[in-house]
Image (cartoon, rainbow, N blue to C red):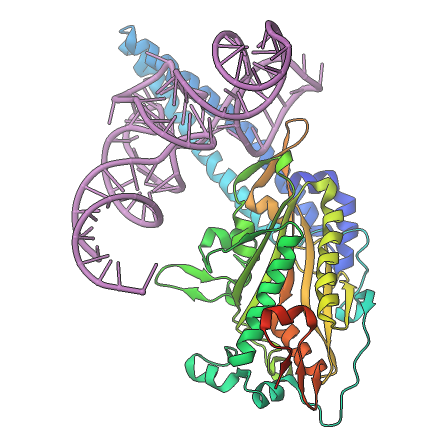
Amino acid sequence: MLQTAYIRENKELVIERLKKRNIDANQIVNDILALDEKRKKTQQDLDALLAESNQIAKQIGDLFKSGKAAEANELKEKTTQIKEQSNTLKEEQNQINNDLMQLLYQVPNVPNEIVPAGKSDADNEIVFSEGNVPTLHEGALSHWDLAKKYDLIDFELGVKITGAGFPVYKGQGARLQRALITFFLDEAVKSGYQEIIPPLMINEASGYGTGQLPDKEGQMYYMQADDLYMIPTAEVPITNLYRDVILKTDELPIKNVGYTPCFRREAGSYGKDVRGLNRLHQFDKVEIVQIQHPDQSYQTLDDMVSHVKGLLNKLGLPYRVSKLCGGDLGFTSALTYDMEVYSAAQEKWLEVSSISNFETFQANRLKCRFKDENGKTQLVHTLNGSALALPRIVASLLENNQTPEGIKIPEVLVPYTGFDMIK
RNA sequence: GGAAGGUUGGGUGAGUGGCUGAAACCAACAGUUUGCUAAACUGUCGAACGGGUAACUGUUCCGGGGGUUCGAAUCCCCCACCUUCCGCCA
């Protein structure tokens, strides 16, 4: 959520930048500012009334104490009038605040200056690529066929136990999964991230904190009996660690990494995009989260991108980095880089990480602030990214590294898997 | 799941109707003292939204919501959460 004060002070910029998202924000911005003016006005009136009533209450107290009950009772009558007025104003004030919130919830984050204009992922700007697209041998298989051939992942068994999108990993497949998780965690810890094991379920307040609620509750699994949601990503519990917190400047940046399974309902997904490991209801992901001083957050974003590049380099997967265009940019993000690996048998690029700077958009809802150099409290910048999401990495690894003799395990993973070939 | 007790500022914790935005202590910060560190002493020390060039100042907030009252941290109702004991249990 944007801050009203920010919109007020940067009106033209906000409208201009939101055009990158193909949004004409003129109307809503003006509505917000008008409501905000109204809010201030009512508050002033209300404050004045309450101040008066506070004062009278004090007088009445004094009068009673000095035994002047008659005068006190006279004053009492005066307050009923004030009370009526202030109640009306309070209602008005509540209504205004609600309306204002409704409007603010609708406004997405202001894209960074360097976000390219565009409508869809086709307009994303590829800013970096590494590695060559492999040529596969005759008779190469898709990862779901490979998974079956080597008995690594059993999709049907998952259907039996739970349903579609909940695969069962077996044998070397399970081991590979665990190896990747540990490798990713180790790499993050080496880069200075603190490892976190958060709860896998969250309450409503946390859902609001990172913006899954109120709009996107349909994407999360919900446990009605206990009013809890399964996390769609570790970002939610880890970022919410800092909800309602005021940090000190020297505590920044905060760098956390967490591995968790992620649960997503993915309602409405269908077709070949969901085949195999491409889209799941439960999957494993290692997430990096940083909380940073506003002056440094873009440097941090670059650092995070570099970190993920490093992971992909070490795994030897061909990948590319793209800067999301305005039309493809997530609601809460100011700037996002997507990392995609090439999946050789499917012959397509798969998104394995999305690294974003939310600036103060999340922090505003989270109420995560810090005391700056001048002792002033201001909102932090929050950032996060996958480092990395497992299924598509596995898909790409299996497909790209297949040989007639078996599937080669990248060298960096061998210490973790204990084998260098899936046979 | 049953029972009891709790929820106050960064922490401990006082506060049962007006003098309490909140004692005291601890922590933190600034300063004095000190050869350095420590100790001691002095001061500062919650947040949000407003008004004012500023000094300063108004309102709101004592788990959340509602109520009683001229006036509520304090009384009443509902809800959430926590702790302890019992039951169950990796």
